[in-house]
Amino acid sequence: MNEQRILEELVMLLEANGVAIRREPLAGGAGGLCTMKGQHIFFVDTQSSSADVAAIAAEAVAKIVDIENIYLRPEIRQFIETRGSQIKER
Image (cartoon, rainbow, N blue to C red; front, top):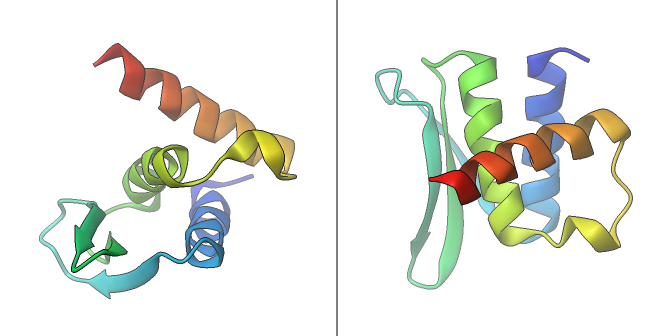
C-alpha cells in the first residue's frame, strides 16, 4: 500500500472520529493536529509529500483513536503502531 492510500485512510479515520480536516498550503511543514475552541482540526499541508503527511496523520490517529477496539487493515494498523512507538520514544 502506498503512502497516498495510507494517508487517505488515516484522514478518513480522523474524520470518522470527529476531527475536522483542512487542506492548506503550509510551505512544506506537513501540517498536524491542533485543537481550537474544543474542536480537533488536522491540517494537511498540500505542499508536503504524502509520506510526510501520513506520518503526522498516524501520530494524530494514535492520540485520538482507540485503535485496539476497531478494525483496521493490517498495513494501516502497522503504520500507526510504528509511528506511535516513535512518539513514545521522544
